[in-house]
Figure 1: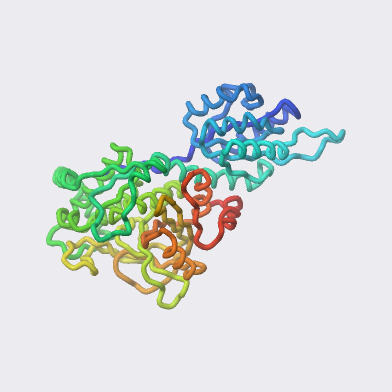
Figure 2 (figure 1 turned 45 degrees about the horizontal axis):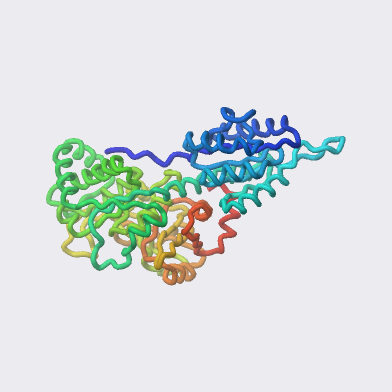
Length: 481
């Protein structure tokens, strides 16, 4: 199997701000304290020590050299800690020219000295810089004015990096589309041209015939290692409905072909025509392979759902690759719990299986005549984030919500019962909004990071299901996601 790297932590462009007034020595002290914390928290950053005196931006004439330096280092975001007051013009001009997500913060001011003088007026400088950022139309996240060793700084900074990871994942995104849209799925009709124009999302079409030829060649060439891997999988999986194991070997080869092409083409995910041609040529449903591909770091959306693939990538980025996403159908309400619903489909990663759930590859129970290979197991429990990137008429929205796994009746395929605070509200939200039944899900609570990321994604409207966003923003600054 060809491994795919997990999203790395975004690189911070650390741009400490000082000013000719107040104590330069105290500004240096605050900068040093902050850098100690960044190292302690293992957050990657690039500072300004090489380009401006003491690594503090204090003069508008230094803006160009600071921008060149940070751009050359490939920073993903800009952090503007105001260390004694604030040179608001310089700070805002750097943010404007870099064009990356910007974080504004400063250490809480201490009491005046015994003689009544003050070492800094950080909060006052933050007010000034925020005004200039608004003037220059620079979106930014603001962290509470707090001391370096107080929780809001660590919490807000780490959550900001999750939001930056989402932004980075969407900008310049390349997706592979394997096969054409399934004819009767009108819900997955979307505009590739708009995705390219609005968000820079490129879709690479992959012809099924040469792709499947490559899969067959790979399966034949690597048959011994695939048989060895299958023996390991059979410790977890039961196989039903197969005359021999050849179709499963092709499914494993399909996974590796997807991963290799993703590495070669710079793809972050796929939208795949899951049936019927692919199934017939492989001799198996491909879902085990696409789920393994997702678990390896390249999300695969079924049924040629490009918007679903985008949703999965965004969730993967919000989770910083710590857990794989899965594309689920919103299906039936819980028979006994009015606020629970069934998350259901077939290509959820095997790594997400509940420990006490048996797992098998067996015939499909809805579509007779389809080859065997359909996964059947229950997912593990815990909190779940739900997201759907979608749009019609040129307006794009990102639906956001969170739930909790709950108990429920056994069913076929891969599934999880999820409980939310107000299911009728969810139901109306998805039906009345520009959404379909497909939603990306991931174990964990990442809605605040997704919500904040939309601040830096022009043309994408954050659309929380159960709140106006204020509750999500409050959590963004008070809870490590």
